[in-house]
Length: 352
Image 1 (cartoon, one colour):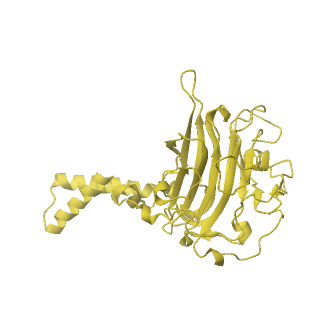
Image 2: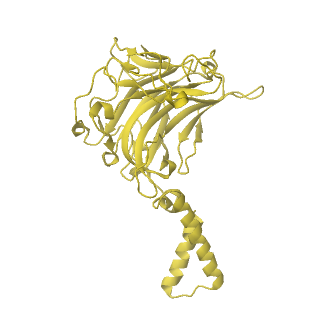
Image 3: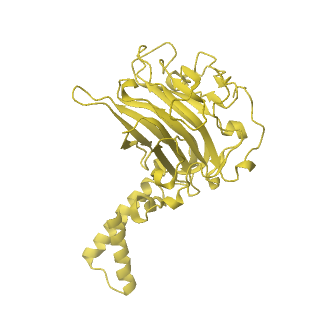
């Protein structure tokens, strides 16, 4: 892409000098313009800047957690009476078209079961694993054995979702003009404690809306990050990876190999230009600009609204094996001017 941009720039410079383009250079110029047009059409007009003509600086990417916490949103799990009412059977509308209301919900009203896929089989407050945030005594364990249709394992890898309410709590989504962000600490267990199956095991996701290349509003989409296991084989050890969703064409890709287990800090931020930024570091220290690992317009969309946060657990759904046990702590949503975002009192313990 830089060579395309440079070639077009050279041709324009020649024209400005008054030089004539030869038939050969004219054809070359036309091909370069056509190639550039193809890239722009595949995403949207501003994407040319994202893929190489102009580098994106870390200073332009909001660091997750660097602004003000949004009131009524997030959880620290420090209440020893924290509990979650599953209201079984769980939902599976994304699999068999059945949404089994009223759906699970935490006693404090901050967490709820989605309608597309069910909540994890285990949603329980536990003691914070060693090395967690200073002073933290409680965290949240999520895990599943049956991740598809309740009571009907089919041996196909599937997922359960647990939602942290944002719009449901404050009565509105957060525009990217407020530079919203979200941070969570995740305990990555030793590889020998993972479900021994290749595939995604844990997801940290967001629900957003945006504009497509025609500047029309999109349906909701769900950028995020996954911890994935390559289970290895007879002569190959298992390998854990961090995967990004999604690039401009819409694909997931592996960003890094996880060489340290234990606590990790993950974050996502959303800048006013509609880009999504991904941050990760081992340990529980606050994120910095040096921890940014990717920036994208996922699917070629320009993000405009931040709606909520959710977490996935995956397993083989064979009726026997459990997912990996995942523990999270202190998920917090931030935004500039957060104190002015709340439009209505948050519901407490009510169904959606």
